[in-house]
Image 1: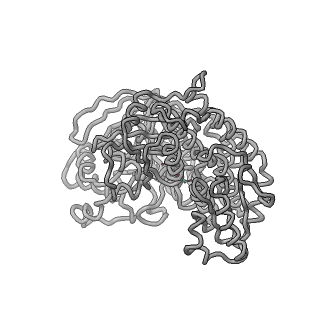
Image 2: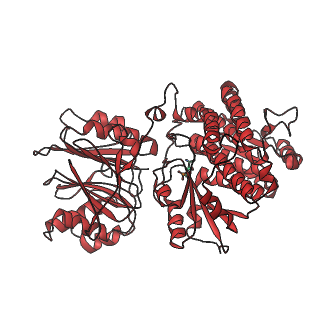
Image 3: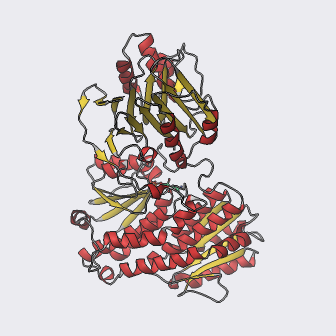
Length: 604
Ligand code: M6R
């Protein structure tokens, strides 16, 4: 969601800005723009709607400057248009600014300070740049003081870069809730919302904290709190494997990431188990968890679906009561907590604003917090008491795939280690390392059968407007995830249902030809789900059954190896991903960057 890159140096910054924006494309955006200034009187502002390639095409050879700021915009306030794209600029055209985040009080600020200013856009962002200009041009403040005062007035989330045309030897930077890093280069410095944008420029970064501002020059960076006091900051090293962020020979990132899952399973086995097949988890974390009377998982989207599986793993192997909350709900409706709650946040990106707001409140209440994430340097990872990494490698496609299965594998590892510590027999008997190996082998078979999945997608999902996934227990959890995968990239209206709930209303939607995909992997409920399958078949549904060996029947289309009940989503989840992938490809849609969606959802 929205990306920012800024650079200040002694040579042209245009290429670094463009390359950075291209690397942030995966986060989702609908327009883009940049402002460069050569620090000797020439500056250029270029903005376009659509892809970065359109911005690139609009850049003439003279668009060069030693200081520059660039942005990809994902529309919140105002439609995607050139006027609403960033950089936004002041009426006087002296100040240029890019912003990630959302302001809550922009109406108020506009009426308090800017009632006589003509606004050129519908964005909340424009208020920020007009305010800075107002304080400089009307109240005679320095740009530093005007920027500081503006930040003090803002209520909301922001990562901001500002360039003053009259002092183009510095970039003014502000941050609250939205991620922002300052990169230190040789004879240049940069700012970006994600180290992925600039990984080939530097590995040395300074992290800006909430409610801080900075002044970044070619050879100097100064960080201040909003009272203007200088802050000290240690350098952080962020290394990104270059090969992991390219598609290689794959046509899409999503297919590459689906295919990487067997490797990720084995990597998790290596990272979290020692030579004696013992799970290795930070003893302090296990100790803290062993004293809890209730675990609360909080997450969004696919990570929420992985948390549902996490609850089953925790309750089976640790016997600790466990609850799961959707982050965007939990934050506004906190349940009555147990006496010794322990919070676990699942987030691939580690930047999801909905999850973060719950985390911030949990920390305020002095509750212990673990974050399970794919991103070691993310905001959530930094703010948690404990972190477990997914080791899945960068996930670029908007649809989460390998992070989902990695989340389940890491949850299982934690549940096993904790259950063993607590003396729970089920955990002692749980040979997770072998199970992860079996899961990896099963995944390998699934991803090698691409023709089959493409054919199934064509047979069941072509030309349809609605689809249903059904299952019971953990098969219901995975139905929710498979439905999310299909709807978010193919735009087919898809729902995941608890199979037994069908007859309580949803079955009214079943019409001849509608696809119903049933997951049947749990022996104890298989017969009941088979009954539900018969009910929809009787009403003309086209049913595709994905079962495991324990539950298979001769007419089933896909038979999976049997894993521990709670680990079946490691395989059924991949089936849902492959069906969604091919259904989308066959519709000629952009698999990696579906409409309206962002990879990293950094606004509440
Ligand atoms: O980075 P997070 O795991 O916190 O992201 C949560 C959701 O935004 C994410 O899982 C989203 O639902 C994906 N697009 C699903 O494929």
